[in-house]
Length: 76
Image (cartoon, rainbow, N blue to C red; front, side, top):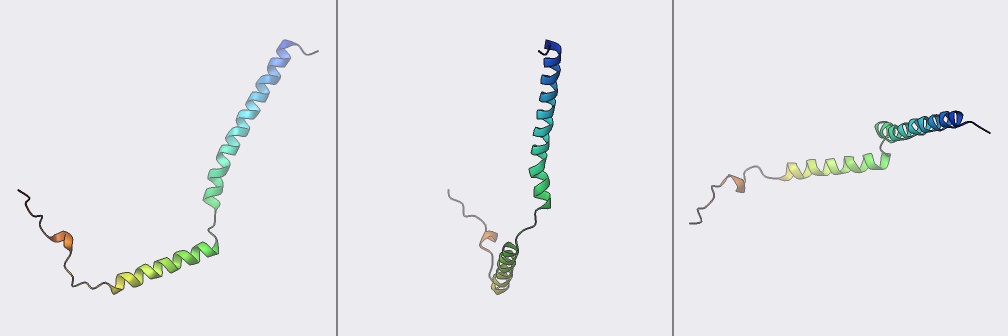
């Protein structure tokens, strides 16, 4: 039979190991996120969206005055 002192030592050791395991698993997702590489399909989709935005921006006429540049009418 183990003495109370030895049981306390084992319990302390187990608690320390559990805390170390918890810290290791908490760090793991953050480390994986920095090492993540986006899939090729996602990169291709982002490229298509960027090309579409560039094309849409190029099609807008620059001669139209902005609606935001007009002064506000006084309500009263």
